[in-house]
Image 1 (cartoon, rainbow, N blue to C red):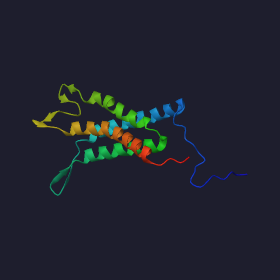
Image 2: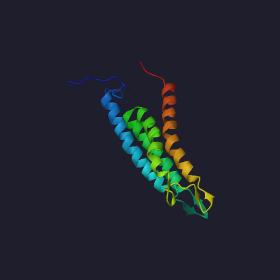
Image 3: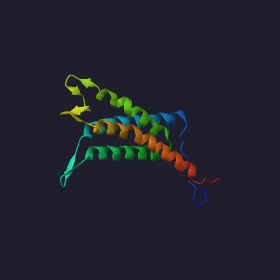
Length: 149
């Protein structure tokens, strides 16, 4: 025997607030943040020359990666918590690569041949700000959507 559902309503609910759900969300966010930091920091200086113009392909890749990670986390969990965790952890996980070494900056040098390298600042901004902006967007859109009773 099957029970029919009213049109437009799902019979499944997603648990987003229990301890187990939060731990799973945190685990997904931590793993994806590690992947994001490693990929974004190693590719942020990649440039693609098209028609004599150097396009910042690494920064575009990083921005798209962060957006995809945020959309995935939101759609997989239905919660803003992993988005906030990615934004908060990104800077902490990137910190070891930001310091000075014997030869200068590790992966994000401040200058190369006396030319300031602003791509390092941009990639840090993308890594930290995109998850917070996505969480804010989800919050605003969630409050604007009409709720069914």
